Length: 146
Length: 232
Image (cartoon, rainbow over all chains, first blue to last red; front, side, top):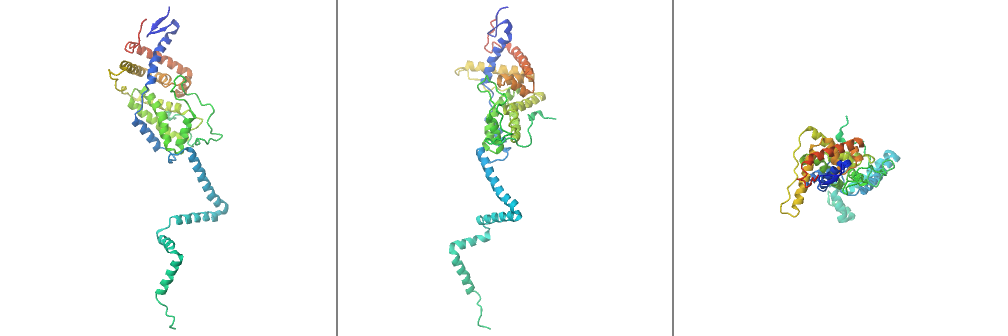
């Protein structure tokens, strides 16, 4: 048996499947060049789902930044926790008191807010003067009566 | 019992370190397992970038979810569409497969299965479950090209061929279809297909041979409509 053609492609006795393969390959190549494309809606939905399930969410930054931040956090923790381990409860208390002092200084409670203003607006001397004046203008001590 | 849609096992403890900080035990393998097809330029190649993206995602980088979606979802959607012959069902499969990736990412083993192979396996199991369960809706191939447009005949012919191939694929038994789609449309090598289908390479070759023969039989009667001539 000599060469025959099937679907327009020459094939031999021993290669009948090759002839079909060539034909199928033409269809495969067409299909590869035009794959089904997902809609933008689907892509957005998948990305949103990914963000919703994402652990350790931080603002968009490179991973190196995350590592660096972790190192900084670890150093701070080591500083305070190390103090607590080395000096016992006293060290931990000192660290806590320091933090509280820093916090109160930066965010003073309402009753202390006026004090700061008075101190820095009028100056410490004028405040003392005012307190003294109040004492003087207040109920007079009658030192003359015995 | 192991849920096959879960893909390869992941530990409950994160094993991936952020990019740029691998340790001695968890560093990426020097040689990644073969996944891609060498004979297609746009075939997905296993790259350290896949693992780095998962690490970024696990570390909380907000943009990583978008990048992972764009990298993997289109291929999974195309694969599912060809397997199911149904765009809507393929969208569901794609979203489910990616959902499993989001869940697995924080505990991903850097020395485990390549991400794309893992996704193909998850999507395959989801598709096979759907095929076992019920019917599929005929594929919407989109609008035909306008008859007066340049290259209209070529466009029509290409559309005819795509539709014929898709219908012929839908006639194949599910495992043959899976092997043919993975090999000839998604561009995986036989070893990678064996990995995805959890079969031997010989079994994959057998599925491919039977699948292609059946495709040829289905398509032979349409050869003239598809622009092929039989001049025996």
